[in-house]
Length: 166
Image 1 (cartoon, rainbow, N blue to C red):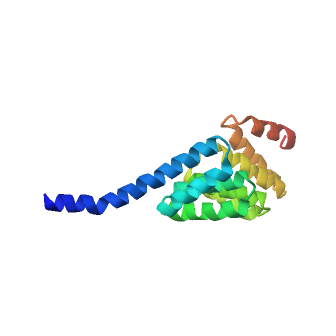
Image 2: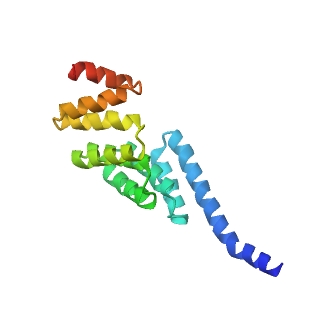
């Protein structure tokens, strides 16, 4: 019985910290849904301070930073998210978008490739990679990606195919 109580006393602080971090994350997510991105970033940062090992916290903070056009900061968050979870397709996808916004097309394509390696059915990655390819004068690659995206019934992909690929 004494060993059980000692185990509980040792684990209790860790459980409280994890719960507090999750509470901060949940508050941040609610703020994100309300488009209160600056305050959401604060809550995500507080969650990270309590539990720096959760890739979701970095990912969501990165998304908010990207929405505020702070893509260099967002990339750092996505870097941390994929360092913590190497198969985090959504983080690669969002980092690719931030790279694209910053004009780093090769890095964007690399991350869209990684996204699709992890999740071959990530239809938006085909659409976005096609756009990056189009912008880098790879019309054949763009059309192939938009064709694949259109197979997932993404209407804009069908429009792009009709306008640029036929």
